Length: 256
Image 1 (cartoon, rainbow, N blue to C red):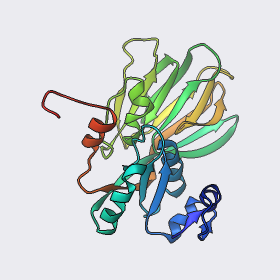
Image 2 (image 1 turned 90 degrees about the horizontal axis):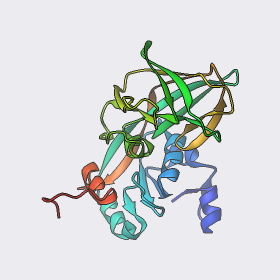
Image 3 (image 1 turned 90 degrees about the vertical axis):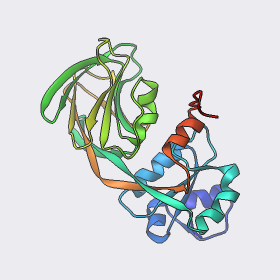
């Protein structure tokens, strides 16, 4: 059994520790990630592209990306050792941005968001898809979400729930000034180009909830499917639809 140095120090564990999740993924068959969705997102980005699966144990809030709660861990581990599990491959989004005349690359499991900063005013974003002009969005922000990220910020902003293995991405404006601007489902093969119209300090780019950079007028972001994926482990018998019922409290007259 191995862990990363930060976890060993925090939990007072006296077991071999490696520097970070990236190094752990090279030496283990399974990563147990304790936390909430934020911890899962950070770990997924760190180890993306490896074959090492992640099992998320929720000790936070909603924990939509986590497979089991901390209270269920004692029951879950014997099932895993007995081979009663499945793997699911999740696509990431790759982003490339020109920020302050420098080019930066990033990736996201959930979403990339271009939003207004501390200014209480709308921002303008020119958007093109595969080289074809789409619209100038006047809004509080624009969310480009992966299938996994459809149940995160995009859902809160009125976007559709997408099955996490669907070959699509969602383009969801936040509080668009034009009422006809609705969430748009695009093929995962598409390339989305966003050019910022407003000067700083109105616009920022964030990745999976973490601010990446401040954007100026003329700065451009390109978003497409990443070449890398991440593997999530699920217990046998669990499903995305069961998670919707349990974690989002979906109910109907025919469901108990």
